[in-house]
Image (cartoon, rainbow, N blue to C red):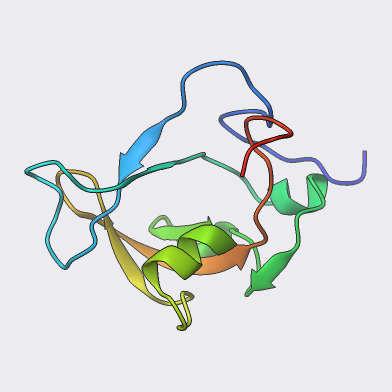
Length: 116
């Protein structure tokens, strides 16, 4: 084994996605209506295991802290068009949990070979 990894969902899993609301403003999503994204819990080594390149910074690790997240390229372009996503803060869910973007990965298929 060269690249062990941990994840809450295996790629191409069958089941319901874990959707998380992401605020488009500086306010939490308490009233609902915020866009949702699929979210996955991962451990260090995940991107190496799946051979998914990081486009900015290093992948999530113990040094990233509990509030650090890695987003994919599509997320970065959607929420921060023309700008740097790493180091930016996003608010998640109804309570507005603050998460700092610590890395940006290349887009990769998670639920099927034909997803976009």
